[in-house]
Amino acid sequence: MTGQGRKQTIFISAAEPSADRHCAALIRTMRQANRDLEFVGIGGPKMAQAGCTLIEDAVGRAAMTYNAFAHISHYYRLIKQVAKFIAANKPNLVIVCDSPAFNFHIAKAAKKSGIKTLFYVAPQLWAWAPWRIRKLRKCCDKLCCLLPFEQEWFTSRGVPAEFVGNPLLDELTQSDLNRAKRDYRKFNPANAKIAIVPGSRTAEVGTLWRPMQQIAIALRKIYPHATFTTVAVDEATSGALDSTRLMGFRTDYSIDSVYQTTRNSDFALVASGSATLQVASAGCPMVIMYQTSPMLWHLVGRWLVTTKYLSLVNILAGRELVPEYMPYFRSIEPIIETVRNLLEDKTRLAQINSDLLALVGPLTSKKAGSTVAQIAASMLAFDNYNKTAETGL
Image (cartoon, rainbow, N blue to C red; front, side):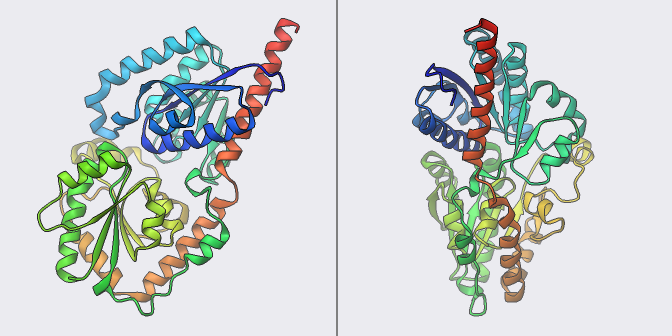
């Protein structure tokens, strides 16, 4: 990438499974172009397999919202550890992926050491914290946006931003989207195949797995021949899910296969997050769920959120394309009734299928992995140019 044949080091910070996956793909892409690159950072098993030296596995502790408080001391120690490592080793580039509450600190440490920082996955400040844009401007040299409208939003506020596509959709082609078009004319809800996607973060699984099972049990009473497949992020999560399976709930498990599982399903119950776009790319009608502390939501959450809709699918659509229960709090009865009404309405299922595929189409116009790799390469080349100019070599 630099043409100098010198070893260059990239520090990568990923604190949850989806970021671990994105960064692993990025590492592989960059190493194919330049074998002299070295990668070090915090992440998970996929990054390690891709050739990144981990100073700590941070993915296992992935948490969100109020559950994160139990891990404050751990993350405080980890931030200090990373800051010392960056200051002592001076990597050529720092890439932080998602988890803004954590990675803002890593980016700040990088800037303090005079190191360029690339944000892979734009923090959703447009949805819940627009006032933090000043903080982002100070610590971000380049921002990679996964949603098309984000580029203009951030650029107009002084942050160098570029829409790069979505890494979850990198393997999709227009032919895949065409094949995901469904014919519901012969669909019989009595034999419905339903996917359950409880999320990849510990907190998501902890709050959604039980109610999702309860919904499935209720639906099975209505549709005795309905079948369920649960997507787990890895084998360990699959085992944990099965160990807390409710009596009367029967399901198969599939590992790290949101797209493929929902491609072969008629309907899905999905935790809010990036997985909803994978479900959308499979053209699978869904209900989106999220849970949080009622006290936190009423005291803080509902005042912070600035968007009309909360799920990515509906935000992109600008309307309630699919039902969202965010948060749903105590009662699952409205969710059961919504799913039942949808399963009984073939026309609406077909329309949702068509609308989801039309929504996803523009997101596949760029391949995130290769685009982010090119951006990182240009930042490395510029860094090398500066160092050469400084030393006169």
